[in-house]
Length: 249
Image 1 (cartoon, rainbow, N blue to C red):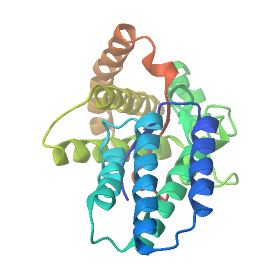
Image 2 (tube, rainbow, N blue to C red):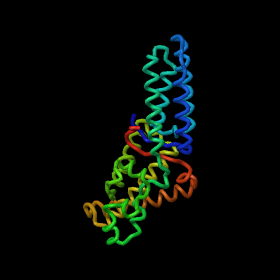
Image 3 (cartoon, rainbow, N blue to C red):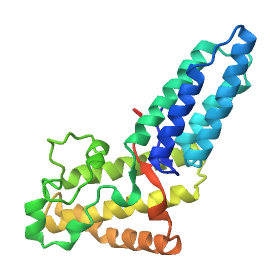
Image 4 (cartoon, one colour):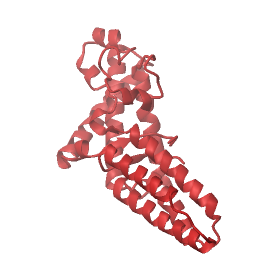
């Protein structure tokens, strides 16, 4: 199950709702196949309600989840035991990404690096955690690191590059239909890539000509993101997100 997921409630609330749903249906027993199918349909109904209530459903990841559960709800030929296991596994995956989710404003960023002199960037660029550029422990998880690993500019650049590519792929899969949330995420990812490229250029990291071109383009992307936020003030504060290419979730 691949995709980018955004939760639209406090993550503790989402985790609690998932836990309550799992517990509710783990205790339900059926005396016949007909009763078991009725329980499955109720389960599907409650899972779809949870997805609509807690996740940004304009994104393809949540749409896929709803589609899978809807098919189980509608079908009379479903392997009921298999359906229960698939849905339960999905909920556990969603719980995992929710636990490790992080507010947009706390996502890893090279923005603060761009304010430093080239000399200071060079001295800090190879361990952004140690130098308090990246502070949140959850960011380490999102970047696929352990607490012992150093995080550098390229780690953050790759994070946003991979997620931008994943999002663009999802939009193509939806036949080019771009939601408001996807516009925000594209704007966010491009701006964060811009900060990485400016920091790389100032620090002399990468091919000079290529990075200079990217750094020049970065100012446009950063301005466009600021303009987007100015037009939609709540966007960067209200939602919590986990942005990842693979839901291991």
